[in-house]
Length: 284
Ligand SMILES: O=C(O)CCC(=O)C(=O)O
Ligand SMILES: [Fe+2]
Image (cartoon, rainbow, N blue to C red; front, top):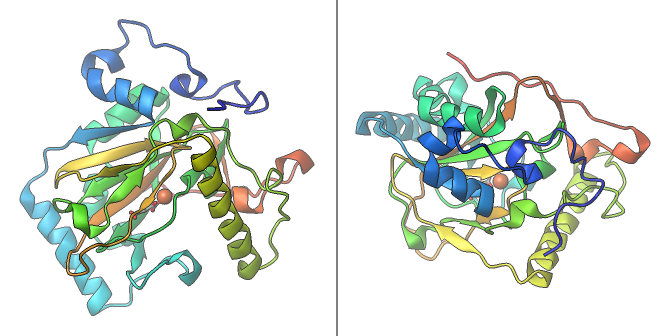
């Protein structure tokens, strides 16, 4: 598989993304021996958490109330691949989501891996599979220096194999970052053009996976576990086999202190166009 490109701004990348080894006495290796290895080599890691059952019951109840009785804030329609809602930024109303986004173990792990303070800044809640095609979240949330982005997918119930679990492509985090110019795209002028670009990007990802003969892995983690993926790891929601099954989960995205954040869908770095993004830290 083709690894990082020369122009992938190797300077100042997160340590593990630049293929540098951690010192033997680095607290990361002492505190998280398995998970650090997994993240470095495979691009994702699974952490066990220690919350009470109550927190999951409360979040699931409040999300149901938002969806069925309230007026939930959703991702735009063009980022939905079925009728299942993607509820965004529910942390503003549901304190227990902040508890998960600021989970001490998750923050400690990310801090040790990236050597910068993690900043949770976005949440999405799901009750069923999105069936979203493979993609990297770095196509949505980019940073300078590059690759200071992590996604954490919290299982809010035990995930059933037939519910359309999340899939990941192990080792795909090592692939070069895909950019608008690489796909010969223009900066979109409206959401229709944005969607067209994105659909081509999804096709590009399918081809990359095929060409590199990469395989996919379904993630059936349990309540009180979370899956952590690095910036460029390909992942998506698999098709639902049994429509009666839910797949309650929460994604939190983290950037890191002291970086610049930008939206790559509206940026062209070769022309010096960077669509900077302000982020708001998720706190109480
Ligand atoms: O949970 C899923 O099906 C995919 C979610 C996802 O990829 C995301 O929100 O970034
Ligand atoms: Fe994603």
